[in-house]
Amino acid sequence: MADGDVVFEARRRSAVEVKTVNLALQGGGAHGAFTWGVLDRLLEDRRIGFEGVSATGAGSVNAAVLAHGLALGGRDGARAALANFWRRISHSGLATTPQAFFERGAPSPLELSPAYVMFDLMTRMFSPYELNPLNADPLRAMLEAEVDFERLRREASAKVFLGATNVRTGRLRVFETHEITVDHVMASACQPLVSQAVEIDGEAYWDGGYAGSPALFPFFAQCMSRDVILIRVSPEERRELPRSAREILSRMSEISFNAALGEELRALAAVSRRIDEGRARPDALRRILLHAIEADEIMAGLSAASRVNTDWEFLTGLRDLGRAQAGAWLAGGFDSLGQRATLHYDTACLETSA
Image: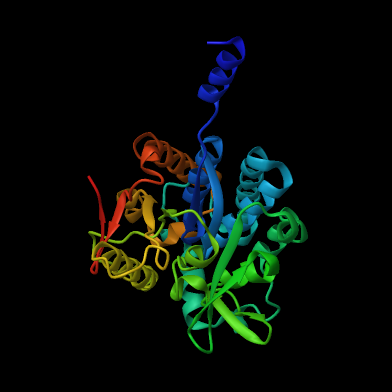
């Protein structure tokens, strides 16, 4: 073999095989720190490229910070941006959540603190229009401080799709990269009992999770990659029966959000059946290869109150869990990208493959 051929072969073998994926990010308040950890680990692995990101709720916040960081400084910039943002969440939370009123590190869980109980009660007795007539929201200020939305719209390397629920019609609206501002992120993450609806172009919007958690259909029309990695924060099942009012409301939201996702998964299952049965032209329909990174048993063990827990130790614990789960998935699932799904869907439920 000639010297030039040897050099070429060495370069070929040393080249990193990059597989491009789409990301679907669920919401979940402070539980979104799990998604932060997953993203941090995926960004660390240079074999993974990102084409599209669809998100709702806290997932939309992570998506905006991710896209901003990628535009600002590539993969390392995105990791730094996510870390900076979640640290800001923790610092701000000390003054803007019920944790500000009880001692850090106290043995009582958050849901037993008098401040949280009062906060919980007030949100169910009064609307955010009564409790917060000036519509002050620290999340908006943090996003404006951390994310350059003009640059995101102009230079984002991944396509961003943020879902929000139209309050008037109940339908999902998906906002795309070229139009995203802080208002669109706030709309996608708007919790109806805590924040006033966000108005965009004369329409009011709440959290997108009510109508799509998150939306998968944008990947069909606008992305070439068939692989979708769903980062699941909302548990599909809970073993314990919710008994407190807050736990019941939280479980109702989880069921609602998962039902919206289930509708899309059933549609994907129908597409796969048509392909398998030869009733669809290969150029007309594409089979989506679905994957999931999750920690359902652990997330199901977290209380409803923990969604507003901004303690740095709690957030970094979820981050580390996300990193570990992503690392485990990469070790066992990376080779499946582009080849087969590692999460299967049928007409009734999600079932993880062996």
